[in-house]
Length: 164
Image (tube, rainbow, N blue to C red; front, top):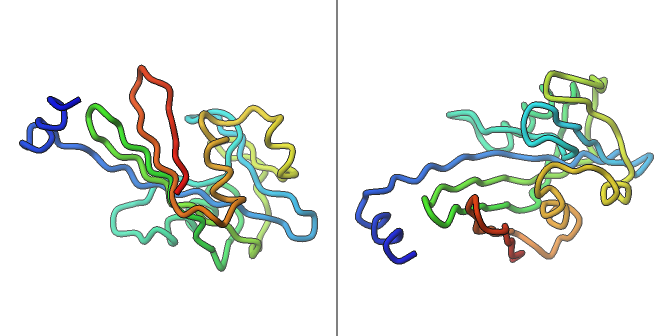
């Protein structure tokens, strides 16, 4: 690992940073949360979200992604923290800004090219086929004690995440 860090410090490695978002939308009348059954990438159930576009704020990107993927307009997003994945060989970063809200309007699309969207009871998530590592994101939405989850990863070793 020391050789890899020296290459990074010397400028031989130019790490990339990918910025994304995810939103837990809760229907207060039923207690259910909105999930997306992803079919294109990151297959399985997760909360909707996507990439931050150049020149776009994190909150604006979350509002846009929810509209595109679900048809709903969301308001009053509350930050839930950040999931921060750091590749421990090439030093690339994958950062997910997490939000939650129960303020929304509009008609649920049901399905887009990204996948089907529907409401589910939060306790049903543990028995569902989730997107890879999504179970590691859930505590950030459900527990206000955390502000960051940091994970070190590579393609060969198990992914470990620490909540802070």
